[in-house]
Image (cartoon, rainbow, N blue to C red; front, side, top):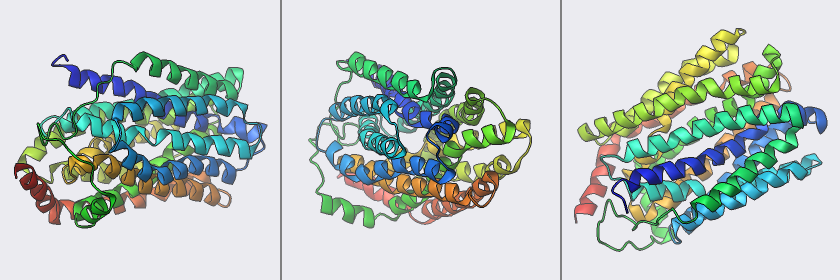
Length: 414
């Protein structure tokens, strides 16, 4: 392989992750069309957002176990084909229960990707470049979210909401065919245990390891909190913009996603570079960078939910997106500092399970609350959850990260 293959791999996974997020975001920009065509209320729209998150979270632990036992390239490409077919099939939904089924099924299809891809990148990039590699990959999330939000609204506006799903699903299938021979499976633990064959960690030992690692537990709790905030704003912001500022579907989807995601694309590489730099000074460096992300983002969430000015909303979404990117850039790199290579797939699966479960519950809760109160007011409560995430991260950085990461490093040397 070329010496640059480790970065080429990040580029290929970037393309897959782009469709992972474009497919899941597309539905939010056509909420007004679904509301009109299928006669859905805000609680049912919230349930659509939650169905994906709950299915994604419920299946994630099993996906993590599978990823630690099978080739990750198989999991990545197989998952891409499955979720793309389901995305395209969503166009045939004619009732709310059918739409709910396809939405949940897509959540199941996407569960394999992140445990497999994050584990794979960690075996091509060691501690010196891991945050940068993962943060570059993270920019695909933001680009995919923008594309899903804008083009789904644009296609739905001109051709109906069903064609949005056909287009995104079909393009994902084509990408899987193109990349079939280009992904190369690395040796597990190549950057941490070079030349040593890594055996899968028994499930019981995995849970005991996590239970004995307070840093990992606190990172999971912070992820639940941060993911709940992101789920609320990303799922409800297109409708919030559409209702409050009376823009068309495409423009509402673009405003709701582009400012936050473009800012996140800037914040994530900066957060990755900063984390690799701080990690050389302290084992808690990556977690400290995440703390900056959630603390800096909280005020902008309040502004987003409360403003009546479109210009102020754009500025607040930009500020939130910048700090969100700083937090996101180290979600997995921080976890991998305290989790052994043979358990990284299931660690990502566990984190996704509880994180997306919490995020799905938050989306539904906002939908229910919006029945009685203005949507903006309901969304504003999410800022307090960010402060909770900051408390978990600061506790981990101050009291546990140095010990837990040091114990893992000593095990590597032994």
